[in-house]
Length: 117
Image 1 (cartoon, rainbow, N blue to C red):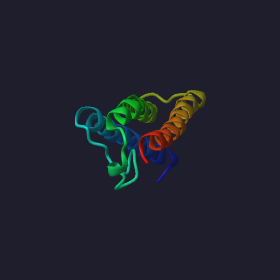
Image 2 (spheres, rainbow, N blue to C red):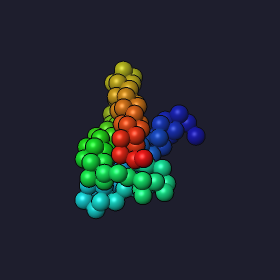
Image 3 (cartoon, helix red, strand yellow):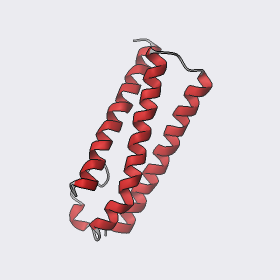
Image 4 (cartoon, one colour):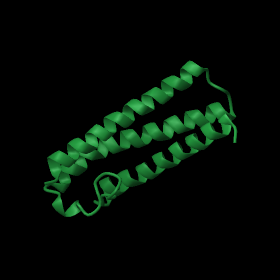
C-alpha cells in the first residue's frame, strides 16, 4: 500500500467519522439521545444533572467538530483524486482539523465536569 493510498484511506475514515458525528448531533438535538462512548463514558447518562443544559452546551460544539471532520476529509479526497493541493494548503487544512479536534476534546471534558456528577 503506497503513501497516497494510506492518505486516501485516512481521508475516507475522517469523512465517515464526520458523518457519524453529524448523526450523533441529530440524535442529541432532535431525539434527546446521547450516544454514550462518543460524548460521555458508557453508563453515565444516569448521572446527568441537567440534560437540557448539556444539549445546549454540546450541540453546537458537536456540529462544529462534525462539519470540520467532513470538510477536512472531503478536501483530502479532493486533493487525492481530483486536483492535488500544495503541501502548504494540505497542511493548513489538516492543522485546522487538529486544532478543532483538540478544542472539542477540551469541551467534552468541560461539559462532563459541569453537567455530570
